[in-house]
Amino acid sequence: MHLECKHISKRYGSKLVLNDVSFTLGSSGLTLITGPNGSGKSTLLDILQGVTSQTSGEVVIDGKFVKRKIRAQVLLRQLQEESLYPTITVGEYLDFAKNVHSRRLSLQKPKRISLDEVYLKNFKALFKTSKIEEQFGTPMRLLSGGQRKLVVTVASLIRPQKILLLDEPFAGLSQLAASQLIPIIKNESKSRLIIVVDHELHDFQYSCDRVFHLREGHVSEVHQS
Amino acid sequence: MLFGAAGACAGVYQNRLNVVGLHWAFLCSGSAFSYGLLTSVLFIPPLISLALSVVGATFASCGLTLLRLKIASHNFTILTFAIVMVWLSVLKLIPRHYGGIYGLSGVPELIGYLNRNIETIIFSFLILLFAVLTFRYEHRSRIRVSAELVAENPTQAQDLGAHSVFTLSLYGALSGVIFGCFGVVQAAYVGFVGVNSFDIGFSIIVLSLAVSYSISVRFFCIALICVVTAPDLLKLLGVSGSGVSYLRLMISGALLLGICIRVRREKIAFGV
Image (cartoon, rainbow over all chains, first blue to last red; front, side, top):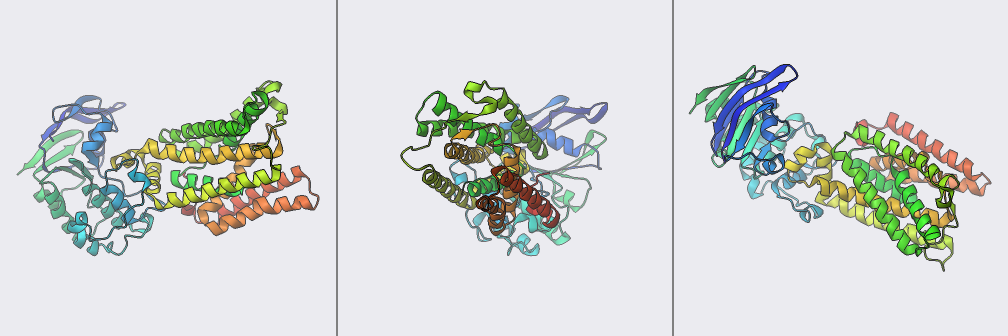
């Protein structure tokens, strides 16, 4: 599933946030888009996700323009960890993320999940490091910021979408947890396209297939493996 | 029993959808007036009128709840408040023959061959049973997860696979059924529907119960006794009906005030 940005520009009033941004990404691989705060990274993600429309240019998936509703089936932006759901537990959240929902399924009981689930086997070490393994029955709102970030990143990674946009997935994680997460993301990128957005270049860039730098609305490729 | 079902329903609705609603008076009043008009003016059999009125309240509630997708939670509160005020004004403008400012009298019983009191107890019990069973099931199903996700961020919830419209409609329908039944049963019990039968004060009473429900079931039961049962008992001591209504509203206000001051913020679905 190829993703192509063709001459994307975005203007908020008189401010040009993105200026003629173009790139083409293949159906799999790991891409890092980096840039300082205010460089237009989040706006680019909003446009890719389809929640904000660009002033000019187009986003093309597999050679076609895809509407937001249908785009959500193939493209997922990392979920936000700030959400303080009153009663949703870690297990329920992961169970919900794993399932492709029908109306009927949403009326059924959530499955009580544990670390032994097949789809969580890659995350065992990560959950142990972050002390989440014992907290599957704990409400999400009671987790620490870093733990919540990790749970929503894992929830994004277990979703079936073919294009994944990860927004600063390492923010708030310990160095050990981040180092455990990198190979998992790399491994996932073998079968689908993963775009990571981060405001700073760190060791993670050496695991990426392509690295783009966004500065004052302009994009330039700084690394290609 | 009716206030128990209504308070629990509003509590679940507000907690899951992260809103504060004040449209409860609109739903009850709408269904009560529909029932009154259908039975007294159009002479449709009471049970059919009950069904039609509840269906109407359900649609109205679904429509209102779906607006949550478009507007922020604090604006939802303002919207529901405005709807009640507009509705009560509209009721006053209706020609006298169809209710209007003098209301509709001679509203018939639901079954007819039973005493009004017994009939009300039976229907109230059925509504309470429906509410308890439904919300017990809801608490254990994925729809609760879905609702909280939608309430927090509809776009993100859709990306996670939640059906936003279906989820909101379901909660809208449940509250529509319960409050619709409440309005009809109350109208059939009193035999009269007036503009002031369900005013904004009613919504405040339900709100105080709903907020109590979001703290704990035990606290909800205590609140129910303080707000509903205790003032009713005062009637036996000779306190007038309007005096009891004012007292009930005062206790509700005091309860809301106490909760806001004492209870940690995140436990209350204030949504703002």
